[in-house]
Amino acid sequence: MSKAVADASGSIDKMDSTSPADPEPGESIMDARRIDHVYRKLDLRIIPAFWTLYFLCSAIRSNVGLAQTMNIDNGHDLGLLRLLLGVVIAGMWPGMSYYLTLFYPPSRTGKRIGYYFTAAQLSAAVVGLVSAGFQKMDGLQGLVGFQWMFLLYGIIGICCGISLLWWLPDRPTVPGDENRHVSKFWPKWLPKSSPALSGEDARIHYEDLTRVYHSRAWGWKDLLYVLLDWRLWPLVVMYFGVVGVGIGVQNYGTVIIRGTNPELSGIELSLLFAPIWIMDLIAILLVTPLSDRFHHHRALFFSVPVLLQILGLLLTTYAGSVPTKADPSANPWPRYGGLLIVGFGLGPTVPITMTWTNEIFQPRHGEVGVAAASALVSGLGNLGSILTTYALYEGWASDRQPGPKQYRKSNLVMVGILCASILASALNTILLKWFGHKGITPKKVSSSSSVSGADAGVPMDGAARREIQERGLGRLWWSKKG
Image 1 (spheres, rainbow, N blue to C red):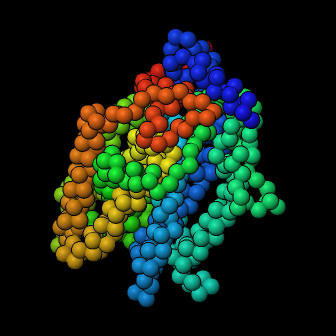
Image 2: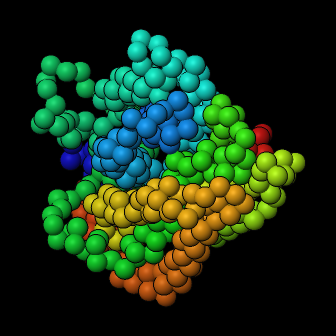
């Protein structure tokens, strides 16, 4: 084992400061493409599992909001279900974000988070369409439509959760030492998950991302350092705003649409709900890959979509008119168009926030910093969803009055928290430029080194050298021909 580590570490020391993803002098295009191939192989193993998990969890969460407009009477209270669902899902998002950092450098995680985050958008669209079918099952076997919906999704979710024990690989291990991270709690009679990579692919990954192979023990003091790090709090505010709006639209999208046109049926509402998340998906696929290629400008790729959300909310609030008995010819569609713009703006903001968290905390605090910061950003930031779920829309009595001003105050509050998110991203950029990298010095990795902690420095594996410069638009699909 020690020989394997020494050999791999020695090969790292011999590498010059070149970029594997965008070759510079001293590195061949073939080497760069070989590294890209390794990460694509990891994509095939990890992303489908994450996508399936996130699709089901997002679908189950969307069902709670949809149930409010389905065939549900006053005898069913979904408040406790919302609470329990929030408790169960709370650790999933930071856990998934942290898991990616075990296999990808921060400059590659934005696109990957975006890949599986598209599952939330597709699930919202599909659930909106499928819920129309569940409404037709009302009364079957003594259950109403939304109960059938909860039951079937719950069974599928349990089966998926069990399958992930083998579907996903354990954290990568040093080549030649595959038994190093075997869990003591894993029963011996159960088959273990197969490694993500093997042979030459495993060696290349080790050289490119050595930092994840040499983690150190951590304690409460490390968590305290993360909590006291000022870089955490602008990220929390950013997440607060965009998640508050995202959950508000997810839980109350059909309610908002009905406010723009009270004449719509439950099935029509479900069908109109789906395109919001298709717009969200399109934005993720367009923006998150670019944010990775220009990863020094995360704030810009975050703020522009947030501005689109603000524009969409203003259109939803003030554009067009609401049909009434006195004016049945009024045009509500500009307001619905505003919701589509909100959906497009929502798409890349959460993946970019979590990727920026990884980029900031991994060099300074190591993997414990990534795990703790991701949990704190998503946990504290999710207070925004509490605001939009309980204080706005259904919770604000004056906003429930039908008419052109319905939900106006709630929409404007969401505009306000989005403005706070933009200001937080700008402040974070300025402070990082002035103070953010003090005390972090480049450091080569050896088999005995500790690569995490505030005083460890930036581990100079292949990926760390690559992240010094942006990839830009180099090595896109049109440049790979020939």
